[in-house]
Length: 419
Image (cartoon, rainbow, N blue to C red; front, side, top):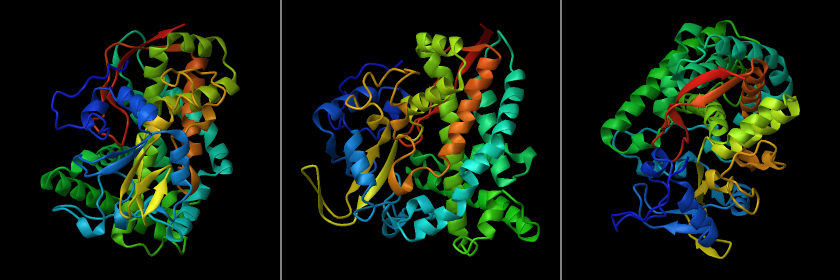
C-alpha cells in the first residue's frame, strides 16, 4: 500500500512537484495530491526538471480544461501531451518530434482520429470479444498454481501484446517487440540526457522501419480490420510523413499497451490489497459486477497519470491567471481520487455506484479512442478468473514504473490458488 507522505529533506525540492519520478516509483504520490486537492487544486510548480508547470488536481477543473481545446492546446508543436515536451522551437540534443493525432488540435486531430475510431467501435469490439475471452483463458490455463511467477510478464504484458499484434496484424512471433518499443517510447524520463534521447529516437526509427515493411505489404494486400490497412485507405493518413507515421504508431502502441497492461496488473494488486472486495467478486460472478469492477480498477490505477495542455492565450482558470504558453498538467490520477466525486477514493470498491465517471481515459475530444478495447480486455480477465475460481496473492511488493506519465508496474510476483 501507499507509503506515508514526508517532507523532502532537500529544501530546494518542491514537495508538491508531483512530476518527480521517485514518488511514483515509491508509490507515495497519494498524500501530496491529497494536500493539493484540499489546499491548492490549481497549483503553480515553479521549479521542476521539466520546467514550470501548473498542477490541476481536482475533477471539475480537469474536465473544464479538457473541454476547451482552443484555449488549452494538445499540439506537439507547443509541447504535446506530457510535461516533458517543450515544443518544436525548443527541441533538445538528440530529440526528434513525432507528431501524433492525440497531440494535435482540430481539424487535423479530428480527421485522423475519425480514421482509426471505427477499429475500436462497438461492432468491432463485439466481433473480438469471444476471441479475447478464449485467448485470456488459454493464458490463464498456462499459469502455475501455487508457484510464484511475474504477473506483469506472464499475464498483463502477454495479453496486451497479443491484442496489439491482432489490431496491427503484426507478425505474431515478433510481438514482444511491441512491448519493448512501448516501454522506451512511453518513458518521459528518457528526455533527461542526450544519450537517452538518442536511444529513444533510434528506437522510434527501428519501430518505424518494422512497420514500414508491414505498410508496404498491406498496400499490396490490404486486410479487412487491421489498423495499417485502415490508415492506408484514409485520405487523412495515407500521405503521412515518416515522423507522423511513427508518432501515430507510438500513440497506438503506448496507448494500447501500457494502459491495458497496467490495469490488468492493478486487478491483481488492487484486489490483493482489498481482500474483502476480492471476496465480493468471488461470490458474485455476474457480468454486470465484473464490468463495474473493471471501471473501478481503471479508476483506482489510472494507467496514465497525467495529460498536459499548453495555454494558447492569457486566460483565467478558477481565479488563477494562466499565461500564454504555460504548461498545465491534468492529473487524472488525482482527479480519480477527488473526494467530492469518489468518496474513499484511495480504496477499491467494486460496487462503487459512479465508477464509470473516472477520468482515466480523458474527457472531451481527446478521450481515449481505444477505451472500449481496454474495457473489454480487462472485463474478460475478470470473468475468466472467476470462471476458473482463481485468486491472486501478491507475494512481494511490486516494482513500479519510475515516471509521472505511465503509471504502472514493471514486475509483480504473485501466486495463484483456487477458491
